[in-house]
Amino acid sequence: MLLQLEDIEKSFYLRDGRLARNVLKNLNLRVNSGESAAIIGPSGSGKTTLLNLIALIDTPDKGNVLFSDENLKGLSGRKLDEYRNQSIGIVFQLHHLLPQLSLLENVLLPTLGSGVQKADSQKRAKELLERVGIWDQRNQKPGELSGGECQRAAVVRALINQPRLLLADEPTGALDEENADKLANLLLEVHKEQGTALIMVTHSTELASRMEHKYILRNGQLVENE
Ligand SMILES: Nc1ncnc2c1ncn2[C@@H]1O[C@H](COP(=O)(O)OP(=O)(O)OP(=O)(O)O)[C@@H](O)[C@H]1O
Ligand SMILES: [Mg+2]
Picture (spheres, rainbow, N blue to C red):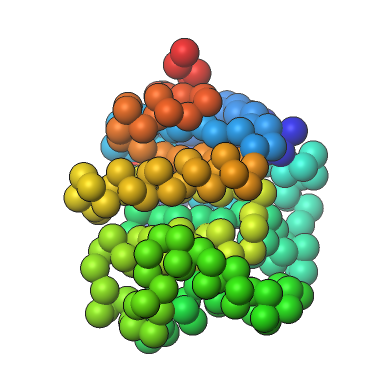
């Protein structure tokens, strides 16, 4: 099992300590290596909260997140950095590229300190940027590029260290239909070719139907939709 969520609970509290929302309640999920899972659910149902727990951007109040059968609660120091930087890749709803760096510098950022030879990282960056059609724009900064181009760069950045799990939070939400299709195809192709497990939050039932599992997040729990 690549990823396992066990009885996850997550609430948000107001500043005075009062409970604001009990977002996830006894939530369970299992994802095998190389598998794809779509997560759909209404706005505010907790989809981003869920991805943040998997990415260790946030921690659950109760329950466990296991990656390769290892409880992530126990991770610290270098192992924690390795998990965040190399085991998983994340594509957010908005690209989150650093504005002061060029596209190439942005996508190479996760390779610094990864132990991978610089030349190998550069070769992979070139292959991926060419593949998504933005190699020619590699020296431009995010502010000088379209939203679709930035989002493609964000996908390259997420894939640069060949993660075993790719998390994508409504990655096509800010794009027009044509660019959204291209980006969705890219994510699904990479998932298939490289055996990267993929968890994607999407509002598109069409896109969700192209993935192996489709889960609906409702009342704090995931229900598989056949
Ligand atoms: N840091 C926070 N503090 C307080 N409440 C929060 C916080 N983060 C999220 N919430 C609340 O938790 C609920 C779930 O939020 P979340 O962002 O996970 O929803 P979502 O399913 O991703 O929605 P959307 O489809 O709009 O992106 C919302 O009601 C939100 O207001
Ligand atoms: Mg969200």
